[in-house]
Amino acid sequence: MDRLIAVNFDQRCFPTQAYRNFIGMDDWCQQNCLRYPPNCPETVCHCPTTCEAIGELEGRDGADVYCLDECLTYNSKCPTDRCHCY
Image (tube, rainbow, N blue to C red; front, side, top):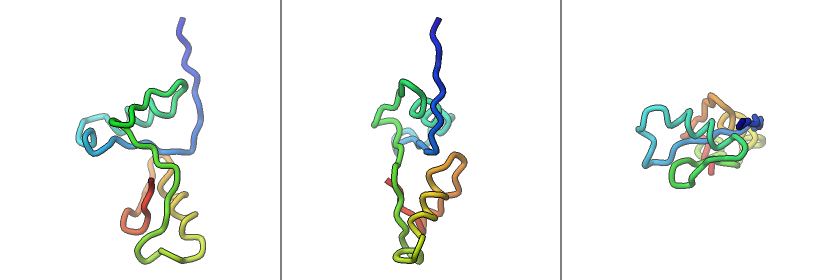
């Protein structure tokens, strides 16, 4: 019997540009990239590990931490005009 092991990451994975418009790909990337063992082809999904403040937040104290907190969590509300994640 196969057993899946849940691995809890405070991370978010997204479909790449080529797969962004496929229905269900947000959930597929999140579930498959963050499981063990992962099934996360680089051509299909992207899992950013860091974020930097840009625009009006760039250079402000704590701005990079704000971006990490807002962008690299499940159901994120990442302000793409203020944060760049990669």
